[in-house]
Image (tube, rainbow, N blue to C red):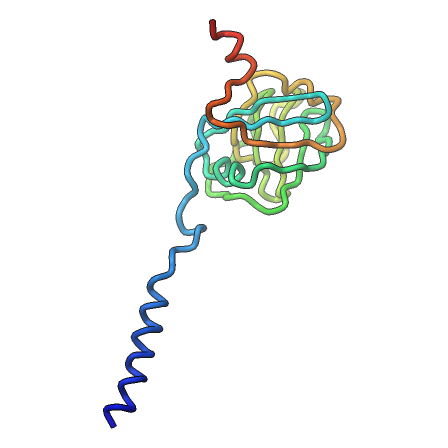
Amino acid sequence: MQKRCLPAVLLALLLAGCAGSGAAPAASSPPPSAEGRQVLMTAGDVEVVITLNGSRAAADFARMLPLELNLIERNGFAKGMTLPRALDTSEETTRSYQVGDFGYWAAGPDLAIFYDDTYEQTVVPVIPMGHAESGAEQMRDAAGTVTLELLPETQQTPEESEETP
């Protein structure tokens, strides 16, 4: 009778060991911060460099890159882009914005880059994900598709290159 129990016990131990040896799902731990990482947004001949902040949404977004998305006009002050999936939404939202701000609207799930300060605030709450120091105004006339790609950490933006002797 012991011989019949031994295979059952070994099988139970083997299954228990396999169940406990798997790695935790990626969603259970936050992604590494993307703070300071730069994204190149290209729409036709318009190029805008966006510096990401330390939000979880920005880190989640950075892991999705590169992307090619359709531009959507948003009331004459922003360009929107619908993502293929939702981002992390555990951050505070705001309706405040400045020209150059880059944010995420979870209900879309849409990204937005603000190119004009026509309004006092946005209609929908947005999670701030970064900022473009210059060039966002050029997005006003951009149409069609936009390419978003993470720049290598060692690559300097054109503005930084001009300051280096």
